Length: 247
Picture 1: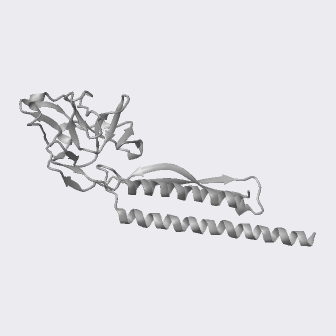
Picture 2 (picture 1 turned 60 degrees about the horizontal axis):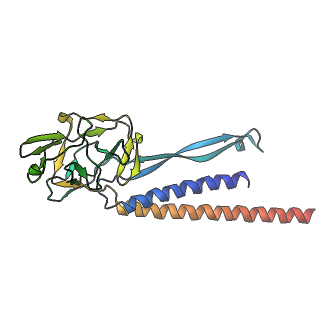
Picture 3 (picture 1 turned 180 degrees about the vertical axis):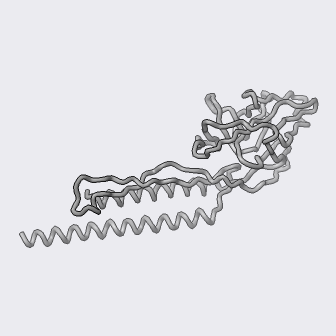
């Protein structure tokens, strides 16, 4: 395989990565708190020792550098559930990750578990600003509400405060499945910095028309790359045939 084929293969791998991300975005159009992803690529230049001309010594490949999130907030969707919240601004709710540790999410569809702990819809317990689960006594569940600063208030008073963690660099946040994110270096926002809207959740910020258009463009680029590869192969075959006749 010559260098041209390697360059085309590098390009096609990048297109496949773009298609995977766009497909995942489309699949999460209705996922609460989901934020659209965008792949990031870097140019990798291979400086060869030899080449037919000096300009041919440097060959540029595509390097997959990861993905970043679209930080624009999704639309507020009213649910009528007093426990549902949406973060008005940047940051993530802090929850207990499956298997231990800490995870983060924008999904504010909340419920009270049988044991009394406040959790998100998938069952992960929410953590307060001390890193502990928020436990709701059975007699205070009916009147439970969440204030704007994240304080969970029962009929007898405050029970704890939801932790909202801010990451200055969104590239430090990566998906880990089930709407949860992993991240390091986050800063817990103080009550004065936190603003939650109750009675609804944040919808996905994915725009289906944009993703569909992107998928069509990716498919056309892949088809163009395939045609180029076929043309190069045909040119190589003709060159070999002519050389054989000369010989």
